[in-house]
Image (cartoon, rainbow, N blue to C red; front, side):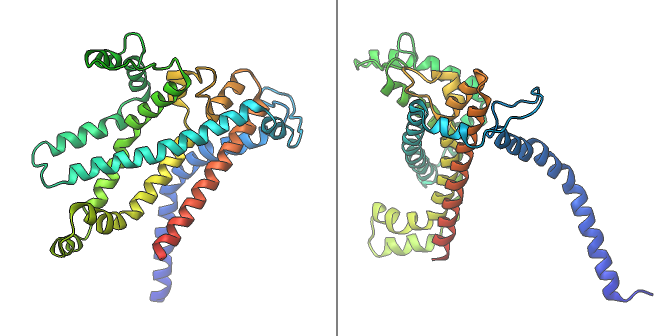
Length: 301
């Protein structure tokens, strides 16, 4: 009869085998539709526009990367992407935190569930439908936003006709689309805060703003960090709203890196397009890695 330790080891092996058996389809799907396209895209970036229909790839080293980095239009799109991200991340986090604090406030006794659903609804709304509706609302000629401004006697909003207003329009539309997710994450963390600290601060005579600054916000630092990472990744890759709303205009004022790469694909410049995509991938990966290292160091301290 087998020794108990042998039976235990055999049982553990069987459990591991069953675990990996169930995991295998998901791992294969990720490898096939996630990892392999990335590897193939990086490989194409080092060729002269190689595609699956090309007979043999002609490798040209870093020529595509050098060509892209020397192009003024690419540097402009990179600058616009960084500027957009630096504006969008703080705006989304600030709005989300404010909404979460309002939803968690004891004075909101009725309608809490309704407001949660209303704020989160844009997250599950199809992007195409939402962006097209909002594009119509921001239209400078017949949009609902300008109709309201006219009724209030305020100046009309230029919409997508000027670089600054187009930039602001995309920022507003994406905030509408993404802020619900960050709000729910903040709200979940607010419900896990140590209430004894807030009660102690109130006993010591601290006001609401002092309690928020010195008690609530320090406890929310991990949630702020995680939301900031998600937002960085999302806005560095901004594409859908540009494609559906502004098409990079006016005068290339909203031609961010992802849309710039797509334009290269559309004109069959596959080598440069994949080089741009590779640069963006590395930038997002490096930013995410640095952010997570900062989060880990912050939590350890």
